[in-house]
Length: 234
Length: 234
DNA sequence: TGTCGATTTCTTGTCGACAAATAAAATGCA
DNA sequence: TGCATTTTATTTGTCGACAAGAAATCGACA
Figure 1 (cartoon, each protein chain N blue to C red):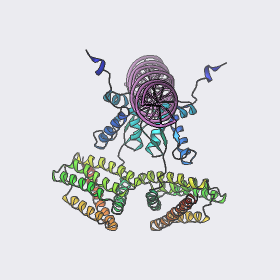
Figure 2: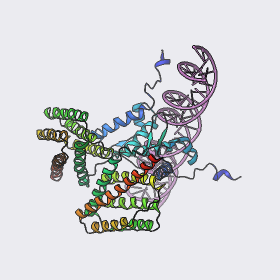
Figure 3: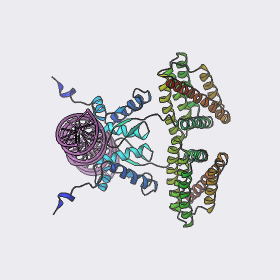
Figure 4: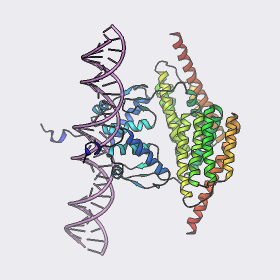
């Protein structure tokens, strides 16, 4: 066996392990492959990725810093739960960040930003056309994240991305059971938002973003109450 | 020597090491004991705290997650620089978060919150009385952080605390050289803010917070331009 | 049979050491 | 002397192992 060359070679660049684990765990958490409350086992991950626990732990520390996992000292670590009791705080933050980032995008965007935003919008429209709810969720988040980037305020971008992540989890939770399709109306509203950003109309951007966000909030609340009714009926 | 009991005993609870290093480094960074750009040496910290590099690295990963240090892969890690070129993004975020957190505090605060807020205000007033600029900076930040807590929106609290931290660094930078004293006016404005929060007057809270924040921004900008003039004069 | 306590098991936090990557120093050559 | 290249040194990223803490299991006793 000529294993002197191929054997026991990690085949992996130094420092890439953490990012790999981080990215994958993050995706699995946001896509609810790992639902809230799922236990996270370090040794299991270490075996799965064929690396020691050290880089695994670093990835977990970073995820904990973003609030995606909760770590009890000397005890288990698990995927963070969704706080349904204080959902209104999430809605408040969502609406405000939609408004602020869209407003700033209208103010500070550069031509190349619009191209990126339009590309995301095209993907979102395609997802709506295909009635692929999960793709809608992801592309919608990417669309608004791109708008936030165009606003060029790192503080707002960071918070907004965090909120969009949480929103992805919440929507994913409902679209597991309900194959509702986001209406074509959202696509049209996105087009309007792009138009006012391109026209640098900050007030209109604020107004449209507010309406748009409130509609999304309303939709989530509708799903939420429907779910509650089902719980009661059981 | 009866070293069987006292020797080689870490005298430190399991898991407390990370927090200790994290807290201390954080304070030293915010107080500019470690100025922006300072190199951070893992082994040096390990020797200083008499522990291995593992808990040190965990603390550093967390600090990096909060943007307080920058880590170049395979190279040095250092205290994050202050982005003077995009200071306006900081000001935008500061003003908005002042407004939102104060508004929410007026809306959602409980009686015990007011006690905490008033206690911080007393400390701030004492610092102003003593003309202790550094204490003013710290107690002012604590005062507004307490207001944010009373607003009970974890998303806004997290971002606001991050902004207040950055503000502490910026102010500290100027108050190293200039012994300006924050005016008594700020103490009075704080009192007004407390009053409208207690009265649950959200609109007045918003308005006062906006004015208050803009004054602080203006003051920082004044220090900033003065510093620039000195740079030119040299 | 149920409850309390001791023991075992399992997971996490820490350690010391090694290897890779980069920076710094030293050497060779024109 | 100046530049390129090799060598050394320093620092980071990763590893395997061990110890502490908590949960689970087991057993003794009422």
